[in-house]
Figure (cartoon, rainbow, N blue to C red):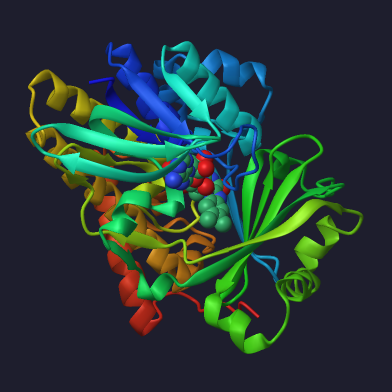
Length: 415
Ligand SMILES: Cc1cc2nc3c(=O)[nH]c(=O)nc-3n(C[C@H](O)[C@H](O)[C@H](O)COP(=O)(O)OP(=O)(O)OC[C@H]3O[C@@H](n4cnc5c(N)ncnc54)[C@H](O)[C@@H]3O)c2cc1C
């Protein structure tokens, strides 16, 4: 074999997996269709990302890039004055106090360069066109740049993001019917945080009834602002995405105040149909990681974190399979099971968020049963849940579902 592993895609998942594989002495090739740096959405990271970066040896390079710290999240009504901030350092079960807000073009390049420095062969500007898997003989991948080339490997890792390269070909993609959303977003300069200095180190989620804004300051001068709403609402409105975005800003006194003297940098982007799962995450000689596993929703900024978590675990399962000369090892199956379990935990809370129950309970002035400290840990990315955290989370989910039916706490006017 030319390579132990070929990886499709050099985003956070592809780079992370490649680094772990290279450090285990495996021969790895990343094929990435773009030339980095390139624009990508997804600037807000989670604190539990930090130990992974440290383990990968990329933390010093990330620190040198001087990204903005993220110390927590703020949830508010877009039209009202009710809000609640979560500070990671104050969470009883949150062991990692701070994350980063990153410009993805810069961040993704640092990770990819670190993969290269770790001994990975990286080919940018190479688009994977097709692949063939033989359980006995290995994987053949064909990619094109100025010319076409075929590569042989023992394993294929799909880190192609929302392109979902291998699962699409196997017709495995299932969209979540209740998460058919569209995101309209851009980068802005001149956003005013003087009213709430603290927001410079937070991700702010400002909620309308059926849509919400994210506000992510990722450098002193640049802020990522996005609006998420039902895809059907865009169709029915008959408006352009630009008009919808502006109308939403005008309808929120908080957001419009911050954006009064702001200017957009570059285009307004639109992404839809991003919430989906795949029926299978592993197969003989194949492991899917990152968004190619499936993607839930941007609301809790879990995308890059889960990309790194799945990449690390997926890479480890491939290392085990290579070392035991198996095409489909028990650790690959265990990886699939654990990943589904992690995704389920986020999905449950995301569904409550869109039901408003999450926000209505979170914005209550008194923290019932210390739920906010459990939410704090989960939103920071803690995946190993001790009993004291698990029961709080379970009762929160249970309470929120009952609240949905019977209105246990005050209903809020989302406008
Ligand atoms: C609207 C929106 C907002 C988001 N906000 C956040 C946020 O605030 N925080 C957060 O953590 N996450 C956020 N996310 C999610 C985040 O963007 C992703 O979870 C993350 O980028 C996943 O990393 P990845 O490496 O799996 O995929 P990607 O980062 O998408 O990387 C995949 C790579 O594969 C390459 N590729 C694809 N097909 C091929 C091919 N055929 N051949 C070669 N290369 C190929 C692509 O060029 C790309 O570079 C958001 C997502 C959306 C849709």
